[in-house]
Length: 252
Image (cartoon, rainbow, N blue to C red; front, side):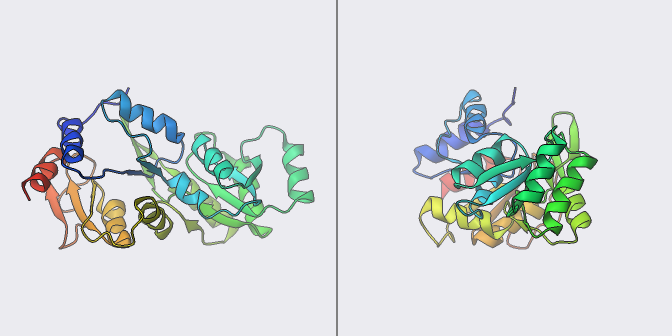
């Protein structure tokens, strides 16, 4: 069960009541969008239509009919389907003959990589072989770690690093802080000008750089793993938490 940071649920409600649109932009590529919306709803935040994931950003890079080999979770499967692409295999498929036949008889257009706990050496072979055979390498994100209630674990970026190293190909990365996610956010908000918007997050290395990519201001909150000294840019404003940020916005 997710636990909200104190004051966050109320802060979001106050911002919305004041007429501000709130998007939840996440590099969580594993979970289905509906599951992420439900997780927010369970802590008191209605978020249907307001969750934007790195899997969706990766899906925006796919073309209808692309044959995709996936090393990722349900969220990536969902994005492949939404893009009209074809999931022809997964790196953790148990049927080795099936995947070998797919690789020999059908061209793999895209290898899509995201976080999945079933990643192993055989999966690395499958993914990297397909890339060396000409498939485009797309990643949902390049986050080296992923926070859990029990501490940090290797993230999708750690898996991606193995595939990129084994294949010798530089990936196209979809999620924060990269351009595909910025383009998707602009499309959802139906504007190219986000100079008056704010990106609120705890990681300058992803959230702060994403603010630069999308062209908005960055509010760093200190309720995550980063501190005020962790690479914040001069234009960054630092707040103890989301409630403190909302108080500033509502006072304007």
